[in-house]
Image (cartoon, rainbow, N blue to C red):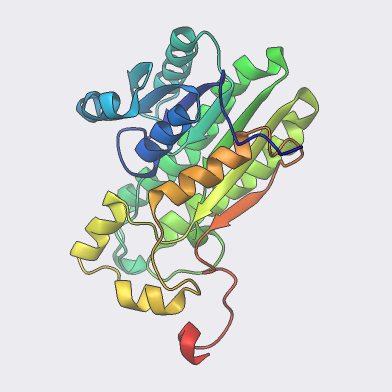
Length: 261
């Protein structure tokens, strides 16, 4: 008997950072897989702009760094959807890729507060709804930058390493209550954030492609599909894991480029 396809039919999902990039694509794909989706983002204009394309049920603007905003956004999403089953924590901020001795400490703190504090706050608020119902699935967005030392990216790397640890800790704490918590760790994905880094000549696309076993940057859809798997009924025994969506970046241990290693 053939297995059924991956489906999120009947699931109620909140996607943070849903106005652009990986968040917007994930919201759209999860919607296409049958979920009812609410999107949250700091930019109200951005939410309105993408809502029609995504088919979102609800829009809830707010700042994931602010505890009261997070509690309100999660409550508004649950009220609009009639409950909450899934969360995709995509709201994030890149650092400036600058020498550590020149890094503005306020910028450092914004990156940590958005990526790590924000992820934690959304998970906590969602769990207050999921724990009583004894079910739910959360996917946080980590990064390959959280697994090794990336020069001039100390804030971003620290925040994403923290996301991985929080993911594992919450998976262990809430597993007995039927809540699964996992993370995806993208490599270099062609998002507006990465496009801006390319335009600012902060990263070299050819060097990244040469260093990546699959030889290319990833697409947001590939991250969204991985996340969909993790929250679906195809992954009922997976929790506390970090799924790398990086074209083999973290697997490569050779010297130089892939082709010459």
